Length: 214
Image (cartoon, rainbow, N blue to C red; front, side):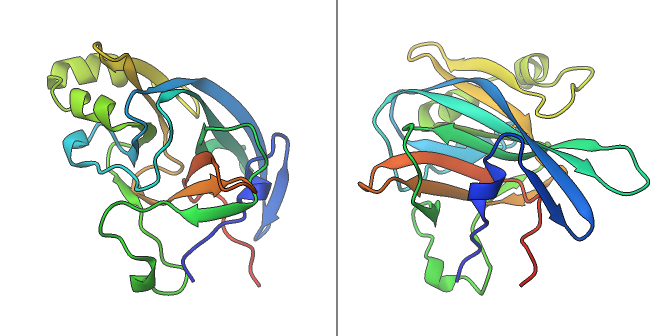
C-alpha cells in the first residue's frame, strides 16, 4: 500500500500528537485565497523550475479557494519548541472528508510503489505551494531578480512564512508559498473526497510528524 498518513489528526487546530517522546501541537494558519482559473492544481516548489511542475490528474472547478497551513510546534525534551509547517491544505469544499488518495500526475501508477512509498514533488528552496498550472507557467517567465524581490525576504519569518503574489496578471492566478517542514526533500500530496465523491481538499504532507509505530 502507498504511504497514507492519518490526516484526520494533523488537520485539527489545537491537536496534540505524541510520537517517539516528541509532542507536536498543531495550529491552523489561514494564508490566503488561491485563484484557480483552469482548475488544474499543481503542488511544487515554485522557486525551482516551475515550468516543469505537472498538474495533478484530479481537477476542480475554476474559482477561488482557501489555503491553510498547519503548523506544528515541535516540543522535544531539553530544547525550545520549534515551529514547522506540517501540512498545506487547499480547501475546495467545506464538507467532511471520508477518503484520501495519493495525488498523482500523468504517468504515475500507485502499483509501482513499494510498501509505504509515495510520489511527491521535490523541494530545493525550502518552500512549497498548491497553485494553478497557469500561475506556475506565468511564474516561469519571471526574471530571477523579480522572484528574489517578491518571494525571498531578507529575514524569513517564522513558519509558515507565507508569501502571496499574483503570477499571471491576465487571470489573477496567484502563488502562495509556505516553508516546507524541515526544509528540502520530497513531499507527497493527497486528495480528499466527500461521501458524494466530490473533492474536498488537496493536502501536502511535509512529513514533520512521523506515522505511529504499529
